[in-house]
Image (cartoon, rainbow, N blue to C red; front, side, top):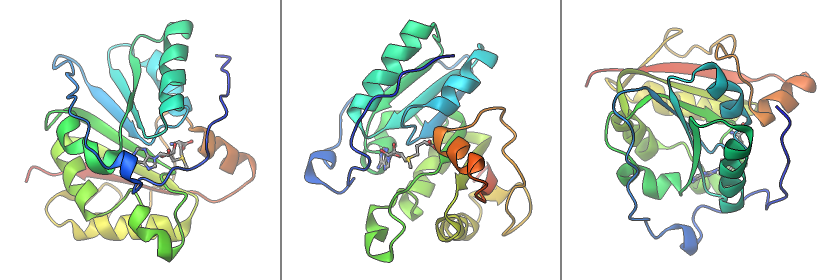
Length: 210
Ligand SMILES: C[S@@+](CC[C@H](N)C(=O)[O-])C[C@H]1O[C@@H](n2cnc3c(N)ncnc32)[C@H](O)[C@@H]1O
């Protein structure tokens, strides 16, 4: 599937005041089919690869860079991918009220953060609050898949998830990374890392019934 690349700012600071006002809109999702979400989808390459193989599911990309959101939706329409949609939001502010609890069957966090310096830790996507929200938004038994090429970020994310006792179980055993990405789709960042032979740290957690 040939896709255009739009030029947008590389990073935005999610703590900037323009991103902190919660958006009131609540997204109504179908209840008769599975919904998978990628948090921080950028160009949504991962979802564009996955959606055509699962026409029975809905794929939602959540992204803070609005021009990318517009472009993903334009391309989904142009390429005839009706089960893929991108939504503009600041996950750390908007996700709690964006969708009903139990909406997602799977959540992907693919290469979430440019903020790997300790002094930028507050800007990071993954923290205790977000994990508690993801737990609510996943249905019982749903999956959270995380991958990063930065070992420290992977380890910090794993620490948050392993500490979330009773909320998630590591599919590969406590404190264990997953060997590969089993979803038949690769994000743009993932493809670039693999092309350069870089190591990727992946983990998969199942949402427990608490
Ligand atoms: C490093 S990129 C990875 C993009 C894609 N998942 C991939 O693997 O190619 C991280 C993405 O997360 C988005 N992002 C970061 N913080 C966010 C937030 N608080 N809310 C929504 N999107 C966010 C960024 O704008 C960026 O597009």
